[in-house]
Length: 184
Ligand code: ADP
Image (cartoon, rainbow, N blue to C red; front, top):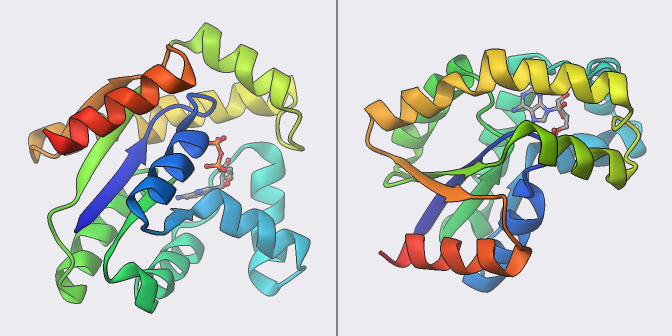
């Protein structure tokens, strides 16, 4: 049973690594960003509520993502484990998740902090070309990361759940480190 939370600045390669590792472990990769982008594309209620926030690089309101995660973790494929990518993104969401996992009887989760310096994440994001990857929005997403998400590093360290991997290496090297750290 593997339950992993991926943490890290936007552009650290979190999405790619989380997806590859989930396929390798044969567990679902649950990316709140992917779910939200799909909802926007499908023009669902959720998508319409989230779009304005995402376009500006702001976090969407907790309730929207929390409901989404709560529903997703109860799907049958999530019983054997999961990788959460992009959630929690702030302390209130982490507190919500802790309670949710207790109520679902899903515990033992570890948090992987994929670390990367600002210069390398900006370069990566600018090269990616997603709609919210313009310079201004990237700057805002990094600010939001620093103010809201980075405090989770201490939060999970205090709870002895944090494992750190250097994201400033080749994809193959990061993947090797990830496999080693979760096997340890
Ligand atoms: P990245 O890690 O590249 O910044 P994501 O795909 O994880 O991007 O997220 C893209 C956007 O989706 C965020 O900027 C935010 O607006 C929204 N989002 C994703 N996850 C959350 C979350 N847990 N809470 C609030 N907003 C979120």
